[in-house]
Amino acid sequence: LTWWISPFTDNPFLLRALLAGLLVALSCAIAGTFVVLRGLAFLGDALAHGILPGVAGALLLGAPGLLGAAVGAVAMIAGVNLLTSRSRLSSDSAIGLLFVGMLALGVVIVSQSSSFTGDVVGILFGEILGASWRDLGQQLVALAVIAALARVFARPFLLLSFDPEQADVAGWPSRRYQLVMLVMVAIAVIMSFQTVGTLLVFGMLLAPAGAGALLAHRLSAMMAWAAVIGSVSVYLGLLLSFHLDVAGSASIVVVAVAMFFVIFTGQALLGRPTRRPPRDLPLEPAVAS
Amino acid sequence: MNLRHTLSISLLAGAALVLPACGVTSSTSADSSTSGSKRPQVVVTSPVLGTVVRTVMGDAGDVRVLMPNGSDPHEWSPSARDIQAVLNADLVVENGLGLESGLQDPIKEAKAKGVDVFTVTDHITVRKVKAGEGAEADDPDQAPGADDPHLWMDPLTMKQWVQAFVPALTKAGIEGSANISKVEADLDALNTEVAGILDRVPAERRRLVTGHESLGYLAERYHYQLVGAVVPSLTSQGEPSARELADLTTKIKAAQVPAIFTEIGTPKATAEAIGKDTGTKVVELSTHTLPADGSYRTFMLDIANTIAGALR
Image 1 (cartoon, rainbow over the protein chains, first blue to last red):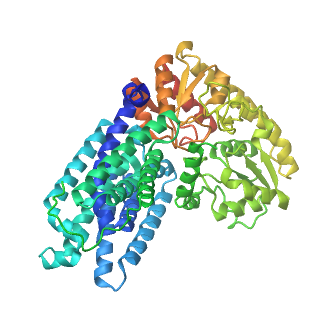
Image 2 (image 1 turned 180 degrees about the vertical axis):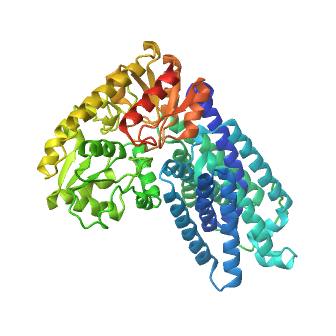
Image 3 (image 1 turned 30 degrees about the horizontal axis):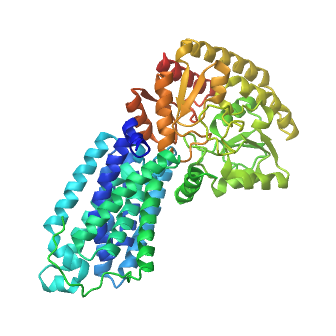
């Protein structure tokens, strides 16, 4: 039992890392399920990396990195929206264009400051082992906002995920609610990057929610699975980081992705069709929370 | 190869997107392309070595420093212009022992072209990593017995290569020996000054915890004990594991270390978290960055004063 628990009771920094990771796992379970169902993975990745110029600019000006990240995310979402609505460009081309552009802009800004490199690595890879109580507070607020958004917009988000046309017909304009959904994903990314880095946020958005989509049919059940798998990944990842002496945030992502593939393989071996959520899925009035 | 090493490679791959542009800001003491004169061109990789080379050479030639002051040498990579400068130099001065990992191929090419290359760590008594310094035991480049590249943390080790540098200048056809005896005397005097500052710290408080393993030469010269590092490695690359941080926490508590020194490239939040858990203050130390006046003397005195002030 000590093997499983004492690393966290003996080391306050590891306990804070665990709590921060669990909060990220819960935020990402909610936001990530919609990312997976709605097919927003590329945009999620673009958001995670597109905030770099915002963060770099903010740090260069001495402003809070969080503010810069928010500006970067807004610019990204607005740009993708503008390009897809005003041109015949497909959304993945628009996303790719802005992704590359924002990343390059970030590099240009970073090159203005010679003493910047450490911070950029920090943005990409995070410092989950350095999580402070203040970071935990921020994570908690982010989780509350994300849960509230998912709850308030449960119906349109559900329709948008499974049947966008019906959403339009039912009076939930898919374009508008997609935007709200993106804001929710952006909050998950922005609030988490300082603690755990954009790499871990993105891994936690996709892997647990992807596994959840394999295991369940109903939205709420998918989220529950994603939350469980994400939380277990955080716990096991940190435990591995302690016992095997390996890097923290990377171990968490490795465990999460490994769990996805174990579930995928298990289902394939058992002969259960591993399928994408079909469009004609019988919609239960499941309420996401 | 262990997993952390693998991570630091993937980290480099990620950072590769970011870093090459940094070389654009390289400081240029004299722009060789604008002057048509045939003044000797000496290219030095790091700012700290560069300032000493400048002092030795005086007005005997142009010195170009490749790494921008304030950059992390462990993460730096050269720009196209830096590589051109290396290939066209009369003499290249490098630290060696892997500090300029991004410059290996251009330097090899320059050597093949007949450019003289002076490797500083070939002309000093290289310090070996000792057991219990916290470096990784499973990485041959970091384990006890590995060569420590951070020679500039000790004025007397600097003096060793400065003595060998004058013949190298002469061989490259540069008349740069006028200042040598003064430079050597200054390094001796600096050693006495630094020792005077660091000796003020009581013996039982001479315990160093740093961002990475950068203070080995200083610790050896002035009888300080290396307790550990946030990133237990000779480079600032890589992410510490939970195990390493837990071990560091234990060591800091056991040795009652008064301060944790952070450097360029140190994961700051992690250092703060360890400081909080152990009740230790976190102090920034400029181990790779020249001070405003650009002199090696001020650089070393600042470090000595910061250490003595934090540990006393």
